[in-house]
Image (tube, rainbow, N blue to C red; front, side, top):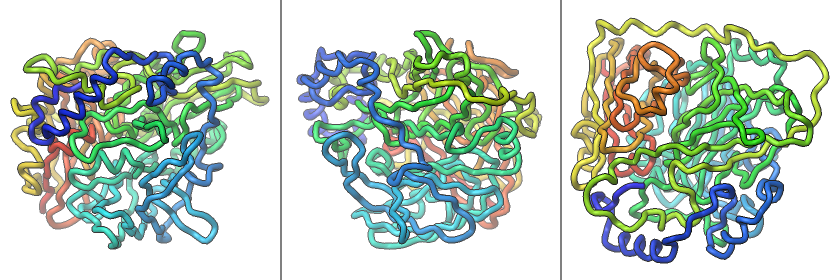
Length: 548
């Protein structure tokens, strides 16, 4: 974890004292990595949980949007959807209800919390939003191509008790996107407390692939929304009002389900997976009998790839999404497959110099450290399905080739931390510089953005509002990344399609092809930031503008 002695811009002596107290209580307790997903938040309960068998650990049926009242699904067309940011007591865990902040879609039939929204490309996403919280909030439409006024960033906060309309004509390719709160300085707190949901965009190309594979949405084509939460003994979500840093949790939820399992047939499945955690980077793999079960990566943040790629694991940073095909047909009925985050070198290199504070894991009792193995979801395999075997087509979609960027101007962006513990993009920190525009680009121009991460840093998932982009190259990459290179320029399977969030490792240089063609006139301001939400709230964000 991070060396918080150098984070003076946000941490106070009171926070340091609380961290020290937590460290004294938990120092020396190392949670059992085989039971990380179900580790409770008290030492006595943690000891008990280590003896749980797999069947007992994975004890809750996975919530599925088509069948769940709380976290259900809504088909959205050009009709206006009413969404409210509010608070409720929700039965998330067995036992006491959990106080959640959430978006509510209210109708005469039912109230749906954080609904999965489905919309077709070309339709208009029309939302009337009301803020019933006691503080400012927003709805940011993560990954959508959008103008400033409808982006939902902290540039346009919605005050308590007020309303705002969002109208977005969806021009994005089919894929899994998401929406979440994005108020300046409070994004980490509000997302951790529950303000986030999924958004599925569909189009004809997507429908043709689904038909070819014989997969029905909600049956063998399913969303998996992964987030970790710090949960106390009373089932409340824990997040400090000040001083949160790289927030990781002791419970992992999939579709808001703790310790989840899913009954599957011995057949082909499609999973749309989103990492909506505040800070936890995942290395996802499907494991059977202790070995990785290869799967096919068919899409990323911005929709389908040109063709399927066989992989054994995938790094998935906060805010990133992947679209995968998993074949359970060779698994015997009664056997199980585990979706797991495998261990990896966390590369949190900012701890390599300066004085150390007590172990920051004291803030996260029962949580597995970053980079440790983590069990997420168990698949219980049943009988095979009758009918023909699905054949994955060679071409999944029409994906434009990577553009020739040799004549494009380059804009250099450096990710770094200063001696006082402040996170910066170049020399910009949002806590200091606020809404001032760091740079402007002319509408219709193209640039290469060269993002260089300092070696004395940590992995940063960099998100660009309002635009999708392509990865041109990776260089000076760590061993784990070099081992996954499959294309020119050191690109990995996740680098081969359109994306809106790119993971940049310490010491690495990543080059992006940015096309600023858009139909919105006048000056449009957007955010560029790290999607480790605590880094964003600590100022690792800047404003850029697109101008006429």
